[in-house]
Length: 265
Image (cartoon, rainbow, N blue to C red; front, side, top):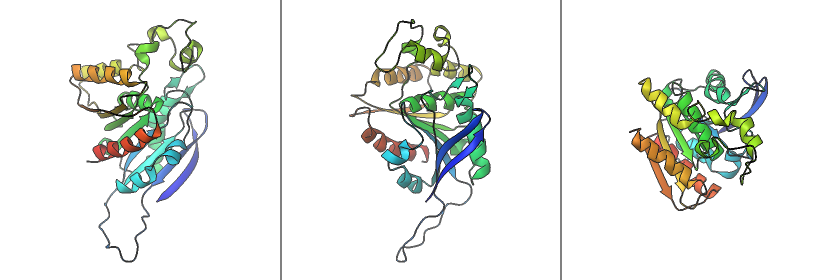
C-alpha cells in the first residue's frame, strides 16, 4: 500500500492544495501465501470527502480506508474542502466544486495509473462531504459513475430563504450566505441536488448511481429521507439504507465498506 501526501498548484484555487492518496499497487504477500492473479489495467478510483470541521487526514485517521483500498483494489484520494461544502466561492475565486469535479480528477489521472472511464470513477463523502459528493457527482456527472453519500448534510431546503438574523445549531446566516451565495436563489440552482437531478433528466443525460446511508438517530435523518423520497418520485436509480446509528465514525466506518462493496460489484 503506497500512501502519499501531495501538494500541487490548483488553478481553481489559485494556490497549492493538499490531498492524501492511497494507491494499492504494492501489496505484501507472505512467503507461505498462494500467489493470486492481480487485476490488470488501470485502477478504479474514488474521491473521498470529509465532513464539516474536518480535513484531508480524517478518513485515514478514523476509518479502515487503507484496508478497504487494498480489499477493493481502488485508489483513494482525500482532498480538503475546508468548511466550504465543496462548492464554488465565486466572490473570492475559490472554486472548490471545480477542483473536485475536474482539476483533481485530471491531475490524479495524469499522475497515477488510473482508469479514465466514468464507470470506474466514484465520488463519496460523509456529512458535509456527503452533500459535496452528491452535488459534485451530479454536476460533473460525465466524470463520476457512482456516488456514495453517508449521513449527508443535505441542507439546501432548510437554509434557502433564511433571513440575516438566522442562527442555527451549526452556523448562522453570514456563513451560509458566504458558502452558498444568494440564499433566496439557492433552490433551482447548481447547488441544489434536486435541481441538478431535474436538469440531468431534461437533458436525458446519464445520472450516476447513488448509494445513501444514514443512521436512524442521526440529526440529519430527515434531510436524507427527503432526498430519498424525491429520488423515488423522480424514478432515479439509487440505494437507500437506514440503520441504527448516530452521526459518528462508527457508522461511517461500517458504511464506507458497504458502499465500496456496492460501487465495485
